[in-house]
Image (cartoon, rainbow, N blue to C red; front, side):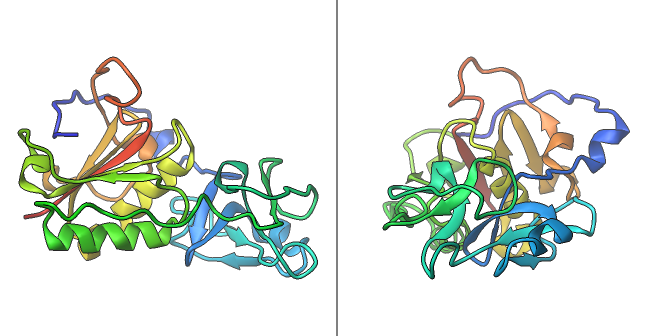
Length: 231
């Protein structure tokens, strides 16, 4: 989606430290959940990964992954990420929706391709870095479109995911925290925008600038991350 206009919403200072305990994360390509290190240790074989996988959380809240999770097979992941196979309970840390995906289950079918038509090479390269960090989360990627804005110059990606999936926030914050490496100009998720050229510093998604309501979840970026890159 092209760069929209937006209005600034003044947020209370307490929103700057909002934590995403029990929220989704991804550590080195493996789905995880942001829980306390003590909680993670309760599950044999589970591993706690320190920052930046659970940004803005307290130090003892880390991304907990567990693979294998059942009889030498399967991976703990979110139900929305398990393309097929059983989902046994009580084998994974975190909330009920984070379960052991077995019997051929996979995190959403892997990594989609990025269209190359008129899409800048550094944008494609940056996009694949994001996709490898969140395997199975994105089902479709859009780049060039004959329209104004960054899509029209091949310097923007729309990373389509399940509508209102909380992993969208995790992805958006990860892109923000890796802005320099990826050469990102701004990122949008859930009707909020973080823009490095506007002087924004890394901060929780809850403290990003609020955008106007454009009428539906796609226009409001609830079913995709929009990532614009520097030229």
